Image 1 (tube, rainbow, N blue to C red):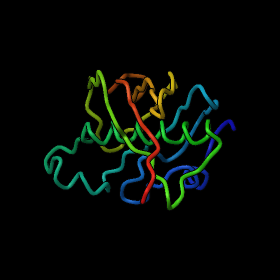
Image 2 (cartoon, rainbow, N blue to C red):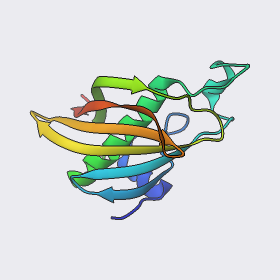
Image 3 (cartoon, one colour):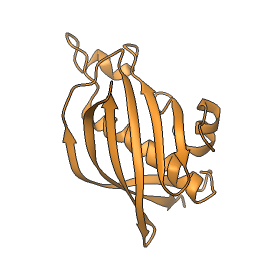
Length: 148
């Protein structure tokens, strides 16, 4: 699969509005790499409070967008999809760094690279950029959880 539109993304993520933070997958290689985009719009609900005079995308939501991108790659790699009995859960973030602010009108490029899976925990190197300039990076750990 070379790319994914929003409808294919919705098949691979349980997230929905207003918390779905991946708009399109530009490139994907199962078991290796994913590059996606989040179009940052002034209409996002969090901008009314963060901040009213100068809207800035919260860093935790940049990391959440990266985590959602890892979810897509993990589901494609494992040849599975989320269902009502499972969730893809963020279990850790290491070495998170923020370099620049993300504002309305920016196109946030999300890049995730699969590193390894150990005891059901998936590890990814992640980076977000705008116009070729890194805005955030780190390592994300996720796991599939079961709903009881």
